[in-house]
Image (cartoon, rainbow, N blue to C red; front, side):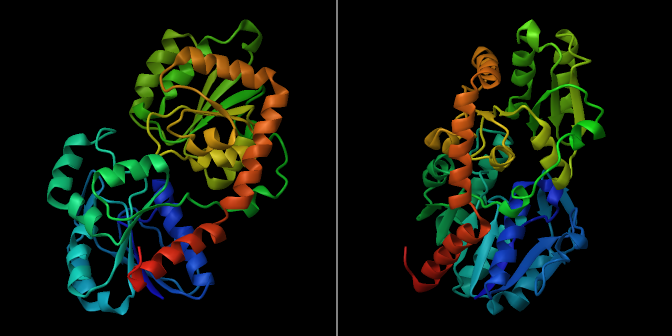
Length: 379
């Protein structure tokens, strides 16, 4: 197949959607397909894809960025000249200028497109007004005319169907499992950040919907015997840290909480490996969080909300707490420390499931089947 992957930006610091596009592309090429990634120059670094042989990377100059709505008018010219070279188009993200152009050209040339919103469908999470306006003019049309919409979870599928997607398939994101089969020496992360005690870990975006404030609140309520423990908050520093700092100061936790800023992929592995537990109490995550799976593969127990623990809850691979329920979160932290048999069983459940279901080869095979069905006119 000749496959066009379209994503509005391509920079690993942007997170999950870029990593999915990158790893899916690697597997598609490995299996003999011809793949082009069409993106913009926004945050683009050519070195991010230099190690993928036979990849055609097309970064188009952009004029401006408005809340990641990246205006790149020259893309229309490129598409008019090249879109007929492709059998199928895979759109990453729902709301983008790039999608606005592609849906009309795809229809004109009778080229099916697959849509993968990457858990961005809900309107009530953030940027609500922008999403409402965009969907009125473009988003609903993009969703409804996609041959298939790939949802990262059953939770996301619910929102996709509310927008009247005609065919929704749940495909959990894949993982680079080989990274977790290597032995990681203990203490690397602790030495790098001068951490002399045990620590709890949050790793992800600093955002009010991620529940970081509730982690801090629960951490402050732990019994005195845990006073030597630290809380590590790993993620790119932004203005939300000021709000967190106020909570930390109010709770007198300045000496016990460490912000690391952005971590490389290698440092993430070290952070999971040295942590006592990983906490991810988000409000909305589309039902699945790769960081939760990465922690489990690092043999580090997890505490999640149903919003990030759809799979975790189903296979009993971690403790589940309600979003914003500080008492539940505190109790879950204590139980994770004290119930060794439970944690051992949950980690095994999680690791067995991940190795059997979430390799990029397995996930890519499912997506190839979706492509083939689209090309054959099947649903």
